[in-house]
Length: 112
Length: 117
Image 1 (spheres, rainbow over the protein chains, first blue to last red):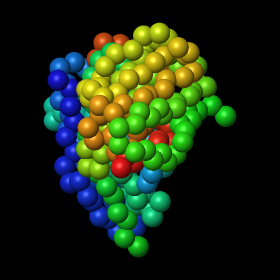
Image 2: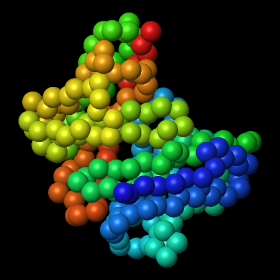
Image 3: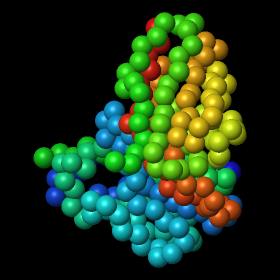
């Protein structure tokens, strides 16, 4: 079954320092992969997606992610954290029939 | 403005009552989804519909029901049979027709927070 693992349920970063959120996936076929962001009591917004084109994917707000098939990883990075990046981040993998499987999320706190 | 609307934002009900959550989209998407979100659990799929007048159970369908009579609308009823209904409920939609194994991105509404006491 398709699934994702997000370690570090809570991540603290200082403003202006890099952000790294790790995601490992399991899939029996060539997957689509996504990162979504959720601000408190809001819906989810798509940050970026991988659909077997370029392995380095650029998203909104300066985020990017690299698909590494050999490592079954899709880690999310941003060079410099901003206060507005404080939110919850979900790594998501396709599971066929247009359905998605969500990781448990990374809660990011940005320290001024 | 295209998007997904969910109403109400907050909903309070007494235990034993059924309650219906609204979800409407004007994105002309064929597929619609309902998720439940609990703290630290990610999102879990309740029901999904790929086309009007058809829907399938997701991973946690027990105690829930849906209908899909119009392309734009996918209401979710939380019945009294749902043991732990208090949660944040999110509706989403997407285009259909993805490749095997792939998925199109889903667009999410703002959510409804249901509290049952």
